[in-house]
Image (cartoon, rainbow, N blue to C red; front, side, top):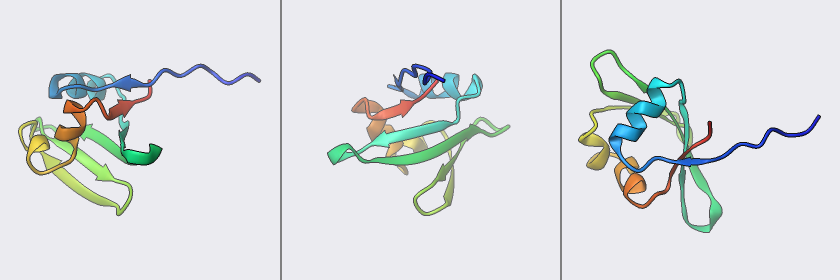
Length: 87
């Protein structure tokens, strides 16, 4: 059976991240130097914050959109076009 063609989508800002998560897309990658990546599972909480599972060490963060830019590498990754979601 042939592999389905999956297109990787860049997430460039908090609005796009919120839209992707609202559509049921929860698996993200932060692309790092050398072609490696940091895998994240991101969901929305009832209070509007993001729940982020960092797969490398199984830690969980609960952050507002603003905190993504100050308490996580996700804000910087969005600015650099390095936050990727696979549809």
